Length: 277
Image 1 (cartoon, rainbow, N blue to C red):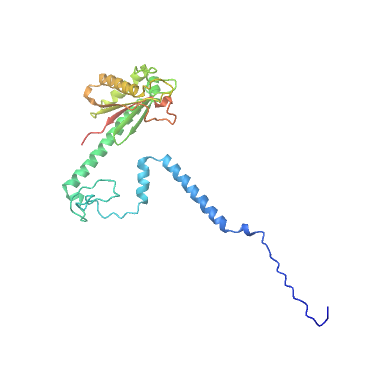
Image 2 (cartoon, rainbow, N blue to C red):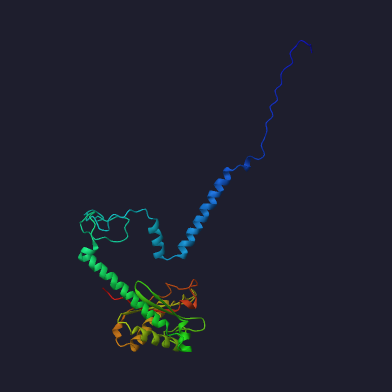
């Protein structure tokens, strides 16, 4: 090559590959959002399983973005009669529109206040009967034994007394509506306490689920027969047979235990009903 000739210029491009491209922070943010959403989802599932319907409604009402203006209907004549589509309570069509009413100055308000006072009074009375029923424990070994089979609760319907069987202490002879001596003693105690109130009584029978391999499922008949047998015994123990107002058999449709075949599901519920107003 001659010295006066220009040598060709060679440009060498070196491509640098960064080895830490996948170690950026963007995917971490997305993953953290995903984990947070999954945690919130499972927390929601747990809350739905651990709370009652009334508690869930209270939570929903707390987060409901509503602005209460008035509790009366607009009195419209449209498809929904002037009521809100989202309202769960039925509002009377008074035609007063957005004009609020003073409950203290109206006859309806006085009736509502009176009904509320009567309801609180009756609830207190039911709780008093509940305490009297529970206080019978400790008088003897027999009553202490009976208390193991009794659960009481004041509900919107009245005072519920649930009498349930245990593994080694049944309330009825197997497969029959014949009560054991223990069941008769429990009914005698409940009838004596229920005599202190003039309220009516409802009796409901429940049984555990039967195996699917049996030729004939007698859950409905058995629960109804046991409830009716309890009614017969109860009426013989109280002054007025008309005190019993309802007798129902629920078969195995409302189990009290997770295992539908558990002995705990063999139970009878006696409800001291609230007065009808």
